[in-house]
Length: 346
Image 1 (cartoon, rainbow, N blue to C red):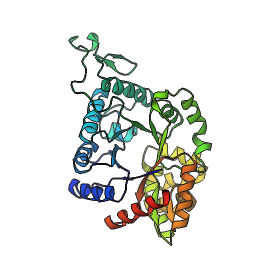
Image 2: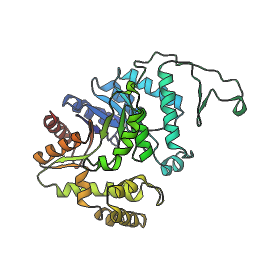
Image 3: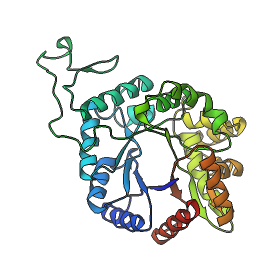
Image 4: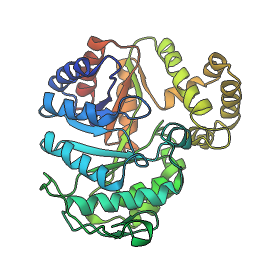
């Protein structure tokens, strides 16, 4: 099982690159650069590609609505070239609050659009003259929708790889089925090893039934909060505001994927309470309403022996990579945590 880390670039790209270089030396396998409504992921990934030599670099995740499919493919090919074949294209639909609220783009047909974007990317990387007649994307643009002067073109450069790994971020049943069918990897959020089969097993089975052998075995990228500590209680409390944000506020009352996932985990009344408190502005109370057991079930927080047991549980549930969220750790703490986790997974 590979150990990765979610990048934190609020301190600037120079600070990030210096730390990732140290983490690479310490054995970190993968760094994932997020893209929500902060700096874009591509700038940081290009910079990291130039400042590292072995660590895998992933977007976590590029939002599929904010770039054309062809630009997504071009960008991925460019990052794969800069990194000498170390890039992983993490894609996700995000949610309507971000896509419509920040980008001004309609959030429609996320499953259908995801499939078409993936298909178009792979055609671009194979350097085929690009033609595509999908439900959501038509390339070249039909004459009735433009000048009629568009013609099929192919990527000028030869990509390092004609099949860059794609990891789809997904929690909803249809999205998870799609990830298992067409992507090299699946990135669930708040992955609970003990409940993964119950919540996602049927979806994964349905997708794997139609999986192309060219995709290889499905990689699962879990992202647990992590801290190796004797007293886990303060660190569990540090995770709760983040969970309250996602469960209570990362989406509208009627459409919040993380709220729905929490209820599918069995915390029906608890999720409702968290959402009510969060949306009424009582965020601290919402955080306190997050059950300790929920945090523990998705985390690697506790003494070293306990963390080793949790690592085994994640592996048993199918996780092939862990992109950890270090809790309460400074730069040195993150380095030491990486070293200790690497020893525990060997």
